[in-house]
Amino acid sequence: MITFEGVTKRYPGGTVAVRDLTLEVPTGEISVFVGPSGCGKTTSLRMINRMIEPTEGRVLLDGRDVREIDPPALRRGIGYVIQHGGLFPHRRVVDNIATVPYLLGWDRRRARRRARELMERVGLDDELADRYPFQLSGGQQQRVGVARALAADPPVLLMDEPFSAVDPVVRAGLQDELLRLQAELRKTIVFVTHDIDEAIKLGDRVAVLREGGRLAQYATPAELLAAPADDFVRAFLGRDRGIRLLSFLPAADLPLRRDLVVAQGDPAPAGADWVVVVDADRRPLGWRAAGNGRLAGYGAYRADRDSLRAALDAALLSPCGAAIALDEDGRVAGVVTRDALDAALARAAADAHRDAAPAAGRSGEGAG
Ligand SMILES: Nc1ncnc2c1ncn2[C@@H]1O[C@H](COP(=O)(O)OP(=O)(O)OP(=O)(O)O)[C@@H](O)[C@H]1O
Image 1 (spheres, rainbow, N blue to C red):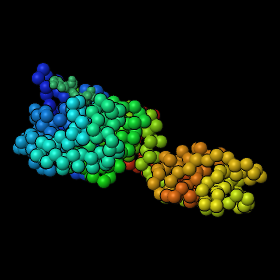
Image 2: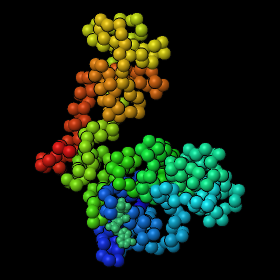
Image 3: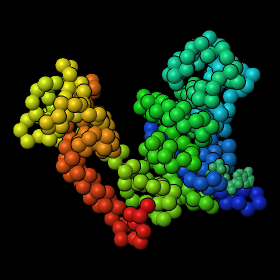
């Protein structure tokens, strides 16, 4: 666990970069620091590994004041990833990744073996090992940066805008990769970004900072979306809060109608306007309207892992506004009717309003 206790950082010249920051980053979770430029995200992050010392207050690592820990020893237990990977240009990929093991005195063979193992972990082809950083794409460089930070298996990882320099598609891939790695490794991660969507996607918790280094809110993404603490947080979260909140609600509880799933050539049950037609393997072929043999396109979601948002999206992509639910093998598990979806959305809205109760009735609430 990382604890900020009343931490203030005042730079020479008088800028207060961080003002009285108090929060806890739980062990094994990703906490994201997000906010507009200059709000003190990087300064806060660097006070954890003592690249910057606080003016007031304390930063604790598992209850111990980091000032009691000698910086080199402290940093061996803390991986650090920055934009563009921060790689050494004159070292090959494999040696970049092995940097910390070399510093720790591992023999070269063992350090390189570990580096290659990590390349596989972060999705880098083995044949890239002997290249220099300039011979890699931006996304590959970021992956090398992550691998290097993980080389000595530190329990804590600090990531400062690590994916900001790559295009949106590569960025989404890197984010997915980080979440997949984290599910395995369970590091304590502090991740800095100015992108609220990245924060909401990656964070178990999100700290929204505002100008002057003040903490505006520290909460789970679902809590932030349902109940922003004030107008600043609401504006920073941006549009479509309600729809985005649906991403955090599982679709697994939606009731499935199996009677609306038929094989090709089979009749629809009495009274059904639309049915889903499936092939012999129960994979979807399309929607069929009563009295019409033609198949129409469809939207589908995975019932075992997708969110209510995905189910709603699937419904909107179907001609009758109902969603096709697939099982983990891609076979049709059933149909969620419009009525069932409406009922689930009404329940989600009621729950969100209950959670947001303290902020209810504020002027402008619900306008964002
Ligand atoms: N070494 C320094 N000396 C003086 N002022 C500094 C120093 N480093 C940062 N600052 C100031 O402290 C404030 C916070 O900077 P910091 O880099 O922590 O913000 P940030 O939220 O990470 O910003 P960005 O998103 O633009 O990287 C800014 O006003 C910045 O100009």
